Length: 432
Image (cartoon, rainbow, N blue to C red; front, top):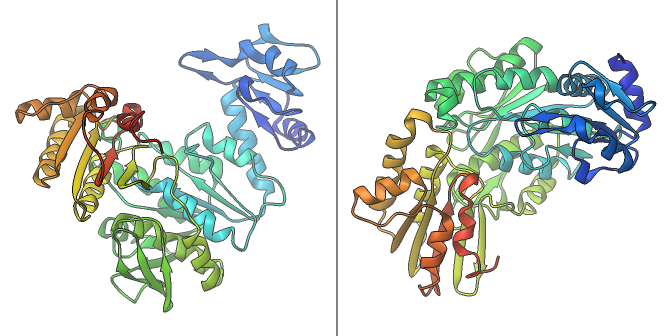
């Protein structure tokens, strides 16, 4: 069996390039044959080599190829250990970002601000789990100056495990909300899981960036010794931002400098403040912070505002939980437009909380008196039927209905868990 030190030398020879998908093999990369519920990449080791990989790391001896494969006990654990070893060779700040809502947006804002001054790498997409985090770390080249790592969790212990791999020197929790209740059990369970990042920082003498306006986070951070506070409600914070308006887009001042963002809503302003606080700590100039915030364009179905003719679309269909759904609906309700339609899809991973939480959100959305409220998914459909309204199974069923409606001069809000693909409600109707 090869040692991590020996594997690391091969990784360097492969120009710090790792592949895990034979459909996307990079030339001269090192391929890790990972396993999933429905696949075993050991069986694709030869295909990876033929596709251009220099080495294939496998954990089943029957797939060995003399001189091209390296047998290990467990490919995933080896990947994680290699990532941690690489992390220790990188003498740069590692910033871990956790939280219930807004992790990816905050990560991208932080990246945008820091990259104005430093060569910065951040988690691609939502590569924030036990596979994505080590792959992110192994994608960091030696000339990188800053690393921003998103840390996701579905159950208690996940953040702790990811911190053992990434070992962040700095950390930020965006908020505590009703996420993955199937795994966490309650809001207190969410807080316990996310606080694993703070506990790591406490043990390692790291520094946390904490929103002083957030009661949950303030209480959770009370034991920490190294904290940079940011806020909009009190000027006692290390970083203070004054909110001018948060709809239809966010405008605020920082050190008397006016800054305009393409994002909308108070919940996104919290994400922006986090990025400003991190930028300030790392001595990014005020003007470059402004440039980093103002140049950030929402994408990938997260907090996107899209105008097509006289129709305005608020597309936030990458993910959903009760906390993010409520805040986004509240924000949309404030928008003044001739007609407003809300398209909501089920929130996943709710466990026994699914029915009461979907009822709360449905009742809240119904109370906002939009011109139309259309819902899809098992749980929202049940709530609609209970209110003598039509509910639908899929976004595609709503799509059929919307094709019969004039959407000119209409604002449309779209949100649901990724598995609902709620953007398909407008497929073939409005191209965006």
